[in-house]
Length: 112
Image (cartoon, rainbow, N blue to C red):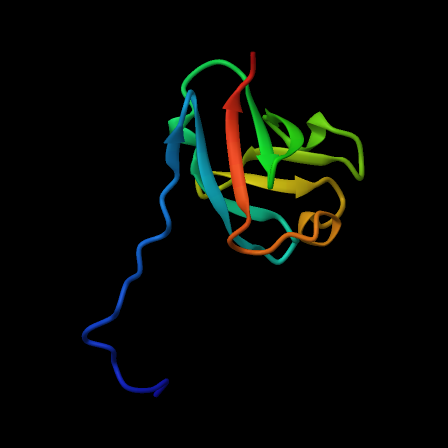
């Protein structure tokens, strides 16, 4: 009753992050309904240590465990429910604050 069944769906692969030195380079894939930026960098790639996130070369700070790690209105990078690095603004929209769009370069570097 919702339409024709799809017998041959087309699935598209998400862009993969690539190794860059001791870190990873990827891209913003999308923004969710809250304005959080979902990236192509899978958290499983970040083995041990501390990591910093950069959006178009701008240092956004370390990867944190929770939104509560930063003050209201601050930018935070964390592991989202999809297992990818997400960039957010606590109590706000990273999409709006950072004027971000899909395709923007994201880099995660090991913190020295």
